[in-house]
Image (cartoon, rainbow, N blue to C red; front, side, top):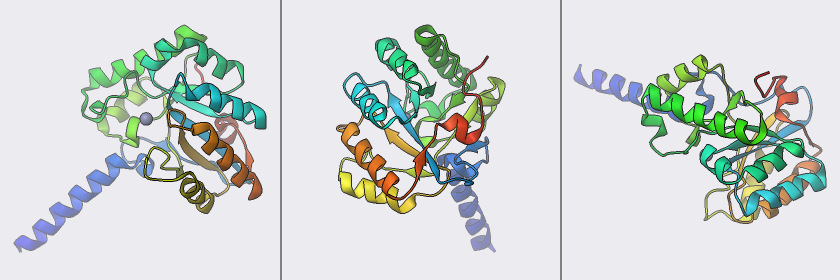
Length: 232
Ligand SMILES: [Zn+2]
């Protein structure tokens, strides 16, 4: 009898870990992780910027290919690089919320702390651009009931991803990352990248080329998901 209980408890723990760690699990909040798949289009998203060195280079590549992406920004970095944030917006990309300090403790924060992290990030973006983002991506893709409740109360929309490039893993070569993205390409894909990574511009170029070679086009996330990225 005891082993039945042990197995049930173990299954419950596994379920709770999955529900928290997978942004697409939709247990604690509804995350939009891909488009409807009606067209051969994908959307590029960048987390953890703006980065003083890499973001301008990433923007150069996007401009070269005339692709509009979404940047999930860290509020403290926004305060340090307001000019880059203004350039992101001026070049037609979307800016969105990725918390103020991107703390590893964010998933363990109280309701008050979570609310503060989200509000401070939006305030920083508003200070530099005048825009109030409605789109949010949780750091590490981790969600829980507290984060879910705050997102709801602030009327934010959570954006996940359907292709994780693993570009932050130092042991992965550019061609491995590209191959990984290529194998997972699907209509309506949301691709997760990081503009803080070393040589993010070179990786981006390769991913764009691979995607185009596979007959996919790029679309901005608001058009793909038919949502408004900012509070009016
Ligand atoms: Zn992040």
